[in-house]
Length: 482
Ligand code: 5AD
Ligand code: SF4
Image (cartoon, rainbow, N blue to C red; front, side, top):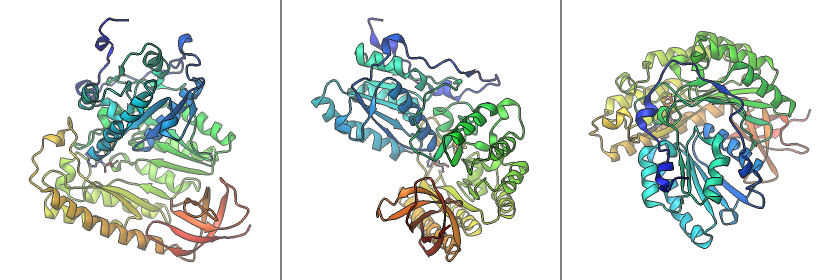
């Protein structure tokens, strides 16, 4: 123990996070340990874990929950019942960060009422220099900050925060390893998230992810396949293969068709449903398209972020494709995968986006007629190249563009759903609908939310439903027998 506790802080560094090198990553199967002193520190204690952001965070939260439960903690769903509150955060846009800072502000009351309460922050915000500094200065109620590469070390960090009463900060920014031995408590039965790779090397100019999640590194194919096979044994029906850019799977392992090979191998395990997220158009190979068309257990649904339809903006975004290259890929996928559903991500109001640029985005939406699109106003992220770009476009204009875009997206979402009227779709049942317990909800192969009436249905069943009504963002139907 040092006298000055600040010496113990391991703070994030953007400069370190930006570095990339060609050395192979080490796969560690022995890194997770619970030190003797930390064994059972959760016994009789409870934790509340809130997850913000993307599926990578959800999967990390499953690992965090697994670790906490190995330490003896029990999950609770009310904040005021918890001895440990952890916020697993997202840094992709500023409004997500503001929400978290507001939440930490609210937690101050709980901390006052219960000084033994431990409050921790992890995930992508923990990787940001500016955020960590702000928290250290202005939010004394936060006891523990750890980064996306530090999850394996949680038992030790918790011990220090809880029993040595230290304020603990441990955020590595350098290349992480691939850690294979973390405990996990999956949050959903029948559907599982499976990481195939971590990090991102694309460096789109607006995006903070390559800094918060580090260098692209792929898990070994055998490890992924073993995980899928174990999931099948445990009764799982669906896996979603996760990565910031799944199409680059295996590049760091020297493979050129890594994703196609992996998809094919996962398809051959016989798991009922395979999905994957997120694709980057740049790395989408013909071989991968071919595999998608070949296997019935690969779902006909692709999330293919567009970001912008303007070549000038795409260039400034460092997206590495033009609008016509995107269209070419889109057409190829549509032709190869019958009835495939497509969704996308679009950013409006990138620095100095002109009316013509925006028009080009609207034209792409008309061309692709997406089943749905996640639309965002550009948010400046400190440390990214776009943060230094000049921007003369008013926020009001950006909001207007978002509204126009959203209207178009909703129009095509409704239109895309109409094609299901009178059709029979196959639904993996999630359970009773949130709004009405006499109705079941689940997702079709095309990733459409389907609500239906029926009897004798169990969570995890795959059933046939006839669609009787279509809405913009869901379908209603009736269970078919047998
Ligand atoms: N501002 C707005 N949207 C962003 N995204 C990523 N970074 C930003 C940003 N700085 C969006 C992209 C990405 C999705 C996950 O979030 O559209 O595909
Ligand atoms: Fe961000 Fe681009 Fe990587 Fe996606 S591909 S995580 S948008 S840098």
